Amino acid sequence: MMVIVVSRAPPRLRGRLAAWLLEVRAGVYVGDYSARTRERIWDQVLGGLEDGDAVMVWKAPNDQGFNFATAGRNRRMPEDFDGLKLIKFLPRQT
Amino acid sequence: MADMPGLPPPRPIPLKDRAQLVFVERAQLDVRDGAFCAVNADGTVTQIPVGGLAGLMLEPGARISHAAVALAARTGTLIAWVGEGGVRLYSAGQPGGARSDKLLWQAKLALDDKPRLRIVRRMFEIRFGEAAPERRSIDQLRGIEGVRVRETYSLLARKYGVAWKRRKYDPNDWDASDTPNRCLSAATACLHGLTEAAVLAAGYAPAIGFLHTGKPLSFVYDIADLWKLDTVVPEAFRVAAQAAKGKLDMSPERAVRLACRDTFRRSGLLSKIIPRIEEVLSAGELPMPEPPKEVIGPAFEDEGKSGDDGHRG
Image (tube, rainbow over all chains, first blue to last red; front, top):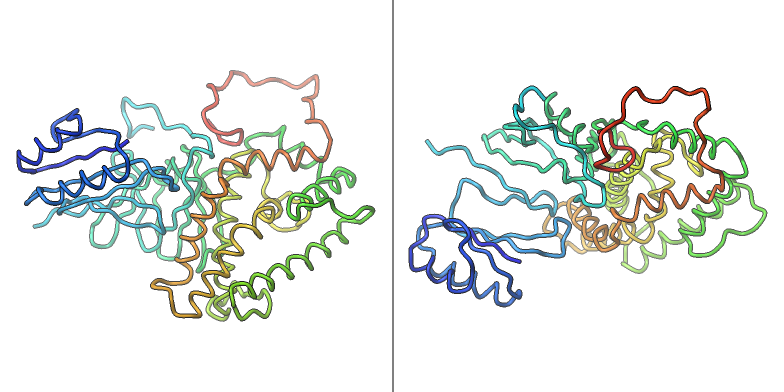
């Protein structure tokens, strides 16, 4: 199981993702692929993201049961708590 | 809760469905929009899924608000205040004593010498994979265990190439210990935190031990020891060896916690620990006490169970 969420992504990337994944809400893509295919899809995101940002979540055999990766800048960025991955929410830039 | 209009308060989920521990230092813990979060000095907010964790360990420099403790209690999550390296100081969030039948059973087993010896023998069997020698007192068994544990320590130290003298630490002077001892302290702190959360969730008293006695966490040490030698001790020596070779790119304490998280997940500790507590106590071969006939039942029935036996609500 994998989920990709993109924001401010160019339309051609969104169209490309829809070739493999189901867009269940605006910018939210869901699918179920092998680890290798997941990485290939993520490479497409990294290549076509431009100024947007993206996050991918997938099921993984760790303590949390899932893992995630991010690309680009967002006010929500990953933070490591001794191996547990949480999200820090940055204050608004003034 | 009054500050959450329209939503019923959160209820505990079973321990086996949770992730392990989170250590927090230098942050203000508070509740925002009903979510448990850590606020850093620079205004960064990190939400912590408190109900999805077995426990939260607050290190020096952490501050926690009334609302945050209340939310942790609601979700049945243990909060422990710890010193450097996880030396436990004080805990709250889900106080024990939710199940009088289980507490009375545990006390009865501990007070009666025969069941107590049967339980200690069962723990010996689980730890060393063989039956305890016949006709030995608890003191004698404790002596045999001590020797075996020391042997295992020096064996593991040799296996990983760690210079090891003996287990020695001073909770008042953390930096005085050598690296292997500090790694061991950090590792056992993780195991004790998880075990305390499990003992409380199962509805038992942390202080009523069988092999260990006289400490606030005697039963926690009893249960933690069942896993200690094959989970956290090898990881502690492995990390200490890496530290001695200068191969660590982080503090030994942090490396130990990462290693413990992995080994606990591999051993399935969170799903095994409560059944194992029940198994050990059943070895006492005493039935659960029946409530006396003249006892008055509760005035109203509680809602259906959501978490483990020891969770309130």
